[in-house]
Length: 484
Image (cartoon, rainbow, N blue to C red; front, side, top):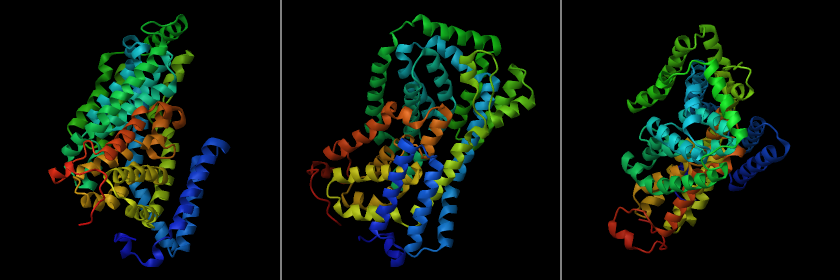
């Protein structure tokens, strides 16, 4: 085993490779059975995986006290994201009470044609997420409204959600306000803006290909015109919204305020709380809602009672309590991840792989696969950046690669792929707020597939890979990494 932080751990505390492989095989097999066959709740499957991992770790010499500390460490990581998630639930309830979501749906149905809806949805989410630095905020606000518009236009929910996720994670990667973007740059010790500029090479083509795919999909929805049945649904929805709610462009102030606060670098939790309160105030002013009704909607979710099925189905959602399924999953998943981290199980695998890294291509591919594996095992895009980044940084230095190559690969495999994992925080959150299972939108979240593939191709060919020594660019990419 190469010289790493594992050498500082007592030998009995380093899990054997076979025991770690057993843990990951158990996770993969049980998750596959749970999701695809027996439909066992993901929460219970993850708890069983945590129990098995605990038993394996204790057999390797860890005490229950150490395991418990690892669980609490995982919970501490989950705390801020879970608070943000609950506040977003309150925002959805407050904004629907205020009529903000209804206003976006109302004008969106009139302005966006079915033919170009998926393209427009991806672009709208890209811009919003770029401004706010948060895929979660974008999905939970603009994304919710777009799901309503898509339903009215007759676009399948999976396609709409895929476009929302693609656009949201484009902006999340490219925004200097994004926590994952800052984290990747920090872990790799790269300059933030150099890191962002370097990501344009992978995310730019990824978004362009995604928009092309959405344009092709959109062609099946009848060009610029709607069939009579779709038109009837839209008219019913527009009439229901107009007759039951006081709609006004003033109601777009709360989402605009979120973007302004993000640009002003107001902390995410604070800006979201302010946005929820603004929704409550607007509900009082524009909809004549009582304080009791507003607080009920913020806690339990808004209940639409217009008598129009299509409208009620769109608007009966939100509330902090609606997020508890995802919150509980987040704490369980990151508790499990805490055990994996503190018992060095993922490092054991990465240390086995590191000696096999011989070329730039194999190094980038290892980084991508390491981030993907961490997303699947630890359910956190943050851990998918931190652990592979920490373990593989020396290999990038040995190859004389600039640190921004590492930070880009970490985001290409860690941040972008996270919403495709059903039991990850990102996957569970996206499914929760968009009202659709992760499996249903995965085939249409094109950006999440294109970007890692493009990144791997760049690694294999050497295209856009930058070296500390400029002359290194002329060296054959297939030459072996030489240790300093």
